[in-house]
Length: 429
Image (cartoon, rainbow, N blue to C red; front, side, top):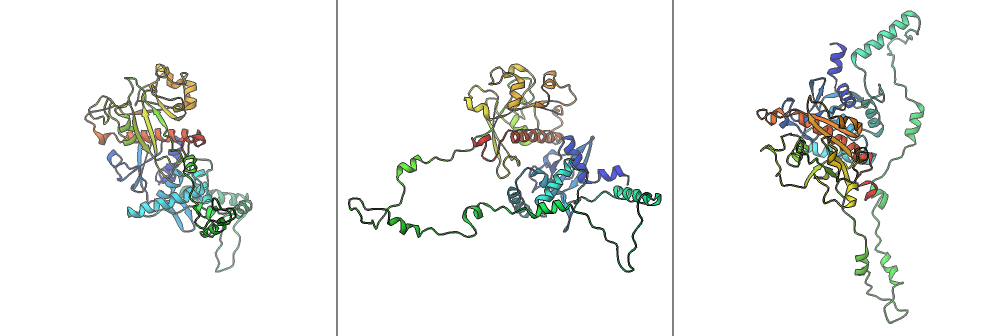
């Protein structure tokens, strides 16, 4: 097998190439990439990972062992993909997410993932994103190992390097990977962080009921100075309860949809596209939403924003009912490139608007991107979908899900960069 074929057959190489190209693979319950109905967003239910690179589809079972090897053996592809998805999660959050996924996998009767340590996850993410070309956990490909051995042999023959050291009979020469002493010193200085129970409550629950009898010494019965009340009511007064600040609910991010009649996505089909990963024309009878709908809600799990629960989004096509603070919740604006769309916005200048929210342009495949959209640069995510064919049906539109995943990935990155988190808006507002 040639070196190129070896790379194509290796899931780590394909994942690195997909990340570099900005075309993340999608999950499926079947090995046939031509069926959109079998696409699966839940990693616990999926069985295959499908790549689309250089007009070619490559499918790998999620149970495929990879070249990422620990002491207990190779790590499977599902563990690799999950670790990359959780690349920005804290240590405690990653441990909790791993436990949750293993519970879901056990319910689906699938193999559990291997819990990676924080240094292993950091090393893996650095390798997948191309920040490092090698890893102490990633074994080289067969042709790379053979090339290194050939280079070493040539150096010995030329006298540039030393020969093989003599070893006593009956013993084997062992080579061990050298570990940076400084790195070992850093690891030795790390300490484990506790969860909220160990931090707030200590190693065991504490009973504070004995404080009650000490409180009796300081509470006097009304009208009898110096006498201690035996029936003290320690319940807070209604006034105190009323004045206590109630926790506010998490504010929902807002996505603005273009009201233009030429837009490929309008209120009639945007929910079906973003939530179901399937495109139909907005005026088609297959569109799932009524033409009279002026507000929609969709949910999406954004692991780097809140890995524990889905984020609920509001979709509207006009800001007429906006209060001033609503504009701080706008995270994405779908546009056709026509600037009249922004006349009623808080930020009418496109450059100013897209510095506060991500722009998204959806066009037909193989058609020229509008000049305005090109001029707005990287502030606008431009994607293309296959042209609609009534006879094609849902099974023929499996590429739509790949486009949708790219849009959500851009929205998630933009929200994370602007400070969105578990509590909602930046600053916990």
